[in-house]
Amino acid sequence: MASHIEEMISEEQIDKRVREIAKQISEDYKGKSVRLICILKGSVFYTCELAKRISIPVTLDFMSVSSYGNDLDNDIEGLNVIVVEDIIDSGNTLNKLIPLLKERKPASIAVTTLLDKPSRREVDVHVDYTGFEIEDKFVVGYGLDYDQKYRDLPFVGVVEE
Ligand code: IMP
Ligand code: MG
Image (cartoon, protein in one colour):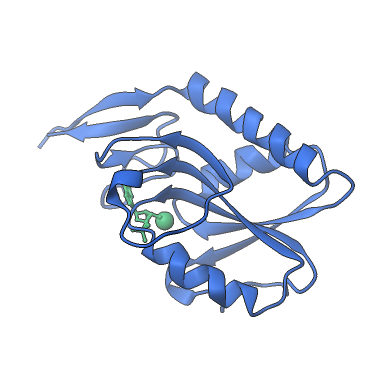
């Protein structure tokens, strides 16, 4: 079955917004460094684009969401951690993950997400830097998948069967 992807957020719009967030983070953490923790796999594109544009020192780590931090390669004690998400939907993932990361005593912990679907929220989560708030539609591209497909698209779009 052929699917068409209807563009929702263009490559240019994403690029502009990522630069704005990177600038904001660079200002907010001026004189410090940040550890970006990428939640695999969806956040890989956003994490890389963000990291390249942050002007203060950045280190990276990656974890899969099912592991709840047990697969981080490096300790986060004393670091300024920013968790990087592709999209926040129900909020359940972050609601479980953040307290577990806090137990590891980072100096601070913040959250950024490229996309947010606030209408879907089941539990409250604090988000520090949001790219775009979107309506309740299933989106793909820029790292987000549908059955592992479409991650490679440079824009965010909606699958139309
Ligand atoms: P939640 O906030 O715990 O419900 O989970 C968010 C996760 O669900 C995201 O990190 C994605 O992996 C996945 N997800 C939610 N909505 C979408 C979507 O529209 N497209 C692709 N993945 C999604
Ligand atoms: Mg995810």
